[in-house]
Length: 115
Length: 112
Image (cartoon, rainbow over all chains, first blue to last red; front, side, top):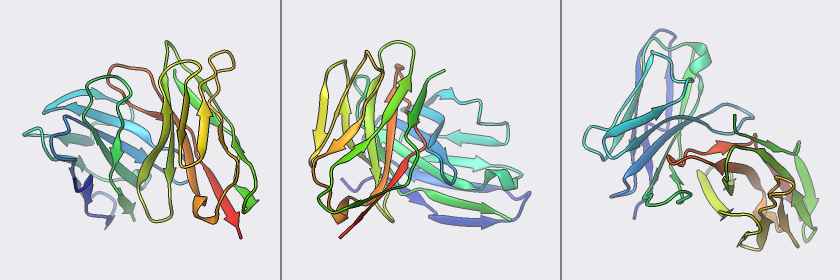
């Protein structure tokens, strides 16, 4: 068990560029979550996958955001036409959820800075 | 909607002091409640959880009791250590998808 990994750890981009982040969950975890955390705030839910199916998306996830989990393993989060307001820490978590309240294991996050 | 309110921080204590961090929540249904901790330079880690009223979660000397009548889940530790310095987040989960709703977090600094 190597834990949840995220790449890159840091990303600096110019406004208007596209960025893509990757999350590798704990092996065989069927649930994968994306959260966004801004300075001084707690993480906010963005979207959730059960295996390869994206089952819920937050209203925070504008049309510029898209997430995939093509084979039910790793996931990518893409932000198109980045804006300065997208600057945040993007967190990924996974769980082997059979029941409600199973533990979510978080990755170290990808810190995005949009100039 | 669901929400979690944490006391304002930061909190600074001397080693061996008693710690209480307040957390109250608003939720439909019967949420599960969590405390997560983020040590400097590390990712979020589950500290403890409670899944129903009157349950007590405990770990590493920390405790929190699920109080449905006061919609609270306050975190306590009898004697803090310098190594407990971190950011602490209270969170809840109400739905079948188990997405977490977090409070703003509070920074705890423990001085020797």
